[in-house]
Amino acid sequence: MGTVDAQTRRDRFESLAPGLIEPLRRFLARRTDAATADDVLADTLLVCWRRLDELPEEPLPWAYGVARNCLANAERGARRQQRLAARIAVVDPPREALPEPGPGEDDLAEALARLRPDDAELLRLWAWEQLTPAEIATVLDITSNAASIRLHRAREKLRGQLRKTGGASGHEESREGRTT
Image 1 (cartoon, helix red, strand yellow):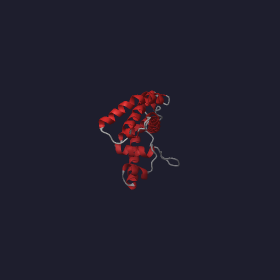
Image 2 (cartoon, one colour):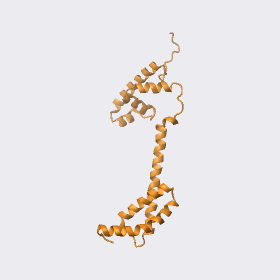
Image 3 (cartoon, rainbow, N blue to C red):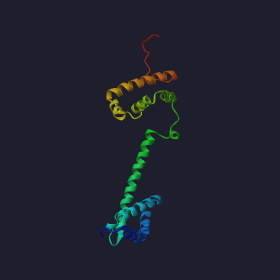
Image 4 (cartoon, rainbow, N blue to C red):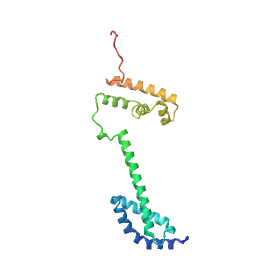
């Protein structure tokens, strides 16, 4: 069927849609949950509208194929969303999901909070994300040398803050063999 005027196109879709909606709804309801089925049904009808000129004389089997593809897309999107949520929960768990702070962790959080936000972020990239200075440079769009220097300075500032709070600085100097 070739290009037709807008009203003829609309009339054709409105005559076909009622015969598609319920069979497609049942088709999708057998394959997924109700909310996803409704979303996929809407997507399927949109594709049918957009590709109205391609609909065969008997449109239902073709529409089932479209619904099947739309459902596969929705399921892929849901899986991506779940993977992203899982990654975020590991990197930045919700506050209520965090375990009680261990010894010195409150001191560390307090010391980090006292640093400039840029220094704290640099230290988080290094410690939490375990990035190298070269990788940190990529994240922050600076040179590797600048990242190394800033990381060194931020670590020194953190040590100073930890000394003020009485927390360990991460590496205590050995006093073995020294007289005090």
